[in-house]
Length: 180
Image (cartoon, rainbow, N blue to C red):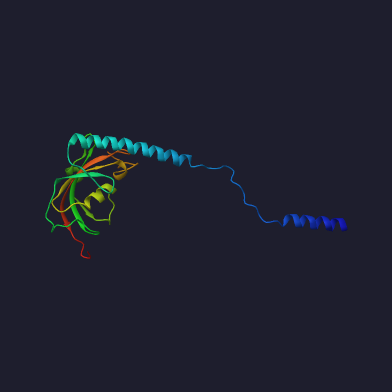
């Protein structure tokens, strides 16, 4: 009986230790993410070369935006009384979409006149940022790298995955938001 009680106490003491953290069965490394980053860097470098070639061939004085795309004004309005759009302003505009080789993807007629409430509606990043630079009556040509255009998925219609594009945009009017 004494041996049985001692044995039970020893078992109880051994079972009362603190829990240990379990180690993962397999260790994941960042290899997939690292490979993805490298692919994206290479793609961006290739797009950059293609875009620079197009800009050189066209001979226009493109401006590099802070947002990561290039543009020039086909028609620039120098009047200071006209303002660029602010948050919530409604912009009425027309645009077309071309591939870097100049082939028309979507015409202005096909896309029709658009109305966009600045930063309140969905619009691809490059065009949203480009519209912020424009005044009523201006026309500008933008070259958007794929990450500023339709990115990895494309538009799921005519624009493929990771496709840089050229857009010619005309701002017809800007209706100011009453709260601005």
